[in-house]
Every structure is written in structure tokens, then in C-alpha cells.
Image 1 (tube, helix red, strand yellow):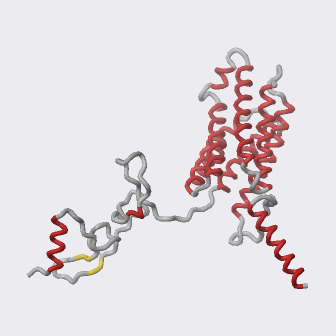
Image 2 (cartoon, one colour):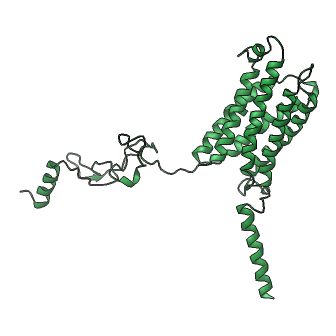
Image 3 (spheres, helix red, strand yellow):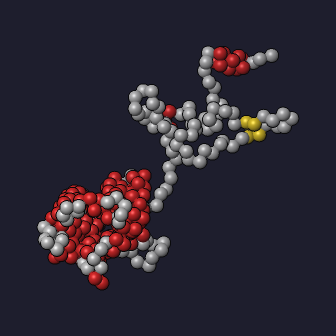
Length: 302
């Protein structure tokens, strides 16, 4: 004979309601009823962190807000995961590629053609740095994602321009004279000078090492752009190109320095790399307040 509780369950089911016995089992029972065996507890299925997995479907707090109109439900919130810091990888990729190109711009060992940089620009400075920028977006760092992804795109586009016999960009522009390519490449570099200046403004409240990285890089783009725009009969203005190479070398070493500062910690290094926070930055104010408080306590003790 059915009990009152069973009658209530049947009535609720007939009315179109779903009864959830356990909120963590995706609407299925957490008890495995095998014929001839005692009931035993069943572990909830692990979807491996898939944000599209149907877990906690009856819990509205586990869903993200809807987007794209009322007909597009929100995705389920993925479990929180701890990611590493992708910035040192992107900075290292940028540093090595910039280092090699800057040495060529300076005329080191009488190397005048940047063909070797094409391979590095595609693989390390381009692809790897772009991936690091995407991971910066995943960890919530908008500035890092914008900077690393953009400079990754810069190196890929740079490699496309200089790919020998590939896209024929240089050959097409230099069909009649070298002036169209030199002017176009100069404007290309000046555009990156403007973009780098915008990023430079955003480093004024960070660290001295980070600010100097973008400052030297911005000067490198400026000098290289001027060198290509103010070309002569022999080609780009060699003085500006070499000066841009010098600032490029400085930017490369500063990028490596910032990368090392992000990698080295108490778990893998005997020392921590100083980055010198600006006095007006948040970290600088915190340290200044600590010094002021300790001084005040010392005077009060006397």
C-alpha cells in the first residue's frame, strides 16, 4: 500500500515537476540499484572541467549570465583552476627576436639582411608570444594580453613582409623604385611607435623596469621609422637604423630582465630580482607607509 509521501511524489511527477534527489548527480539518483545486490552509493560523474558539461543543472547560481538574447542561455561556470604566469614566456620570446634583429640593424659582423629573423619571428617571437598573450587573457590580465598578443602579431606580420619569395610584398613595392617600400615600411613602424606609446602610458604606475622596457622599445620604433622614412640613395638612413638597433638591444635585455623577475622566486632561486616600484604606485605607497609606521613606532618607543 502506497504511503502519503509516495502519493505526493506521484502527484508532483504528474504535474510536470522534476524531483531532484541529490543536487550533485545531474538529476539522477545517487544510489545504484542493482538486481540482487544491496544499494550502494554512486560517485558523481567527473566531466573534467568542461564548461559545457551539465553539472549542477538545478542550481541557478552555478550558471553564468545569459548573453546574446533570451534564447541563448548562459554557460555553466567552469571550476576554478590555477594557471602559471604566462608573461615570462611572452617576454622571453619578444626579447630573443628583438635581440637578433637589433644586432642585424646595428650591422654586427657585417650582417645586413634580416632573413634569419624570419624563422624566429614566425616561431618564437610570433607564435609563442601570441599564445602567451592568449593565456594572459585567460588569467585576467588585459594589459598583458594586449601587449603580448599585439607584439606576437607584429613579429608574424614582420616575417610575412620579409619572407623571401613567399608573399612578394617587397618585390611588388620595389618594382619601379625602392621608395614605395621604404615609405610603407616606415609608416608601418611609426604605427607601432604610436601603439607602444599608448602601452607606455599604462606602465607609469607599475615598476621602473617595466617602464624602461616600453620606453626603450618606443624609441627603437621611432628611430627605425624615421630611418626608413628619411631614406637616401643608398637606402634607409644608417645612423637612425643603428641607433634604433641600440635601443632594441636595451629593450631586449630589459624584457629578459622582467621575464627573470617573473620566473625567479623562493622556490627556484637564491635571490629575487628587484624591479623598483615607482613611489606613486600601489606597491610603492604600501612600502612607504610601512617605513613611516616603523619610524613613528620607533620615535614613540623613545
